[in-house]
Length: 170
View 1 (tube, one colour):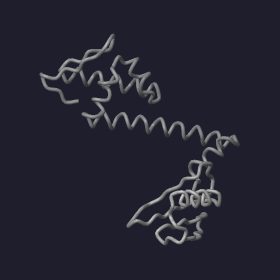
View 2 (view 1 turned 90 degrees about the horizontal axis):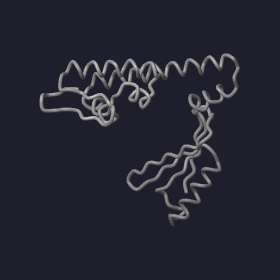
View 3 (view 1 turned 30 degrees about the vertical axis):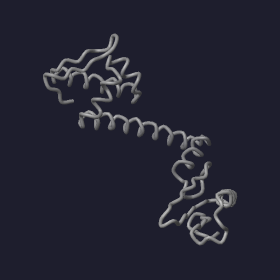
View 4 (view 1 turned 180 degrees about the horizontal axis):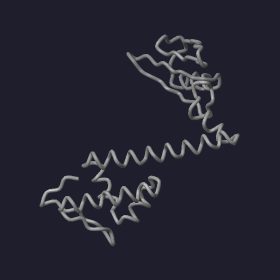
């Protein structure tokens, strides 16, 4: 955070007070980052332990690119750690971990639980991609309820399967 002699960060309660001294602010940031890493990226726990207020934390993220990058680097470390634990569970044949991984990383192969419906409107044309018949039928009912004629060439619903596309115009 870049501070001049006129800017003072205020805090509430027993939170640490920051002076306009850049070295003092840098020490507070460094201490927070150490605590943040120890707490595996848990923001509010780290704020409480470091004495830094939530307002000051978000100000620092916004104003100091180096601090922002350090925080995101720690978050990436935590994600890598958690991913490694997930892969360890998969190697131990833990079925729920395998299912979770497939739902997150193999959606393009049909391992999905929630149907994603994406539509794009260009020049008053609506194109909807769906992965299953039930969702296609639901979209057709929705279009009917909207009062769009069935023979309208501006609306297209695509039933897609991995590596295969079927077009059907309404």
